[in-house]
Length: 295
Image (cartoon, rainbow, N blue to C red):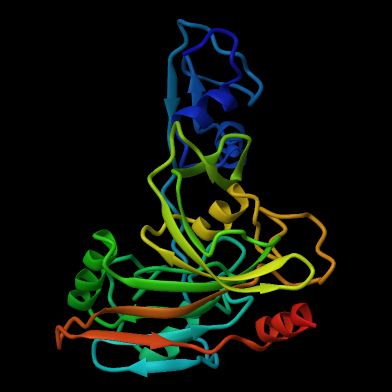
């Protein structure tokens, strides 16, 4: 450990999966000891210090099945395809233990959801952001879950997103191959991170060049990193319209989140072993934005 470094800063570097605020709380709660003694988050370390860290067991959360209207595109004994609306969180997390897609799935599917991802994420193989709309595949049993998860792992699933970005893109198509990891300056955000990031590849093509310097595009994911399309398009100076995290802080359109829609989803079905593909229409807010930028 480095001489004179604050203990909370040191722990952030050692435990990147935990936020600084969470680690500070552990220190304040006495879960971090230096030489057997409780210290404050601003304690500065010495080379000879011995640290003890105890991370408490997570509290069990009872997920309540809720009667939530779900846009079901397809359903059989193995999978269910959902068209997720804006402002819906996929699975319970701090601050969102009700009203999530999982709450609605528990009501609709009863106990017919895969259990591989644990109690908080039954059936969830992949996810999209709260304010991203579009298609998700949910698995009803562990066999289906493993079968589709393997396709995600080898990048054989078709995932095409439609987006509206700032500025006209000159080329008709292109790719961004840049690793994504935590933003070293803001751990709540992701960033292109050549030091600690994981490989991420996004292919894009122009669908329409809109008036007033905007472009309507389709993005195909080769990998599936957190916020991948949002980070990659911002990285090449074409942030998504409505994205106040990776784009302009103030958006004149006053949208609730980014213009991003998971439009096409295709994979090999776990039982039939045949390729299936699903599409969903653009949501109203997205279509209205396109119409506005065309005129």
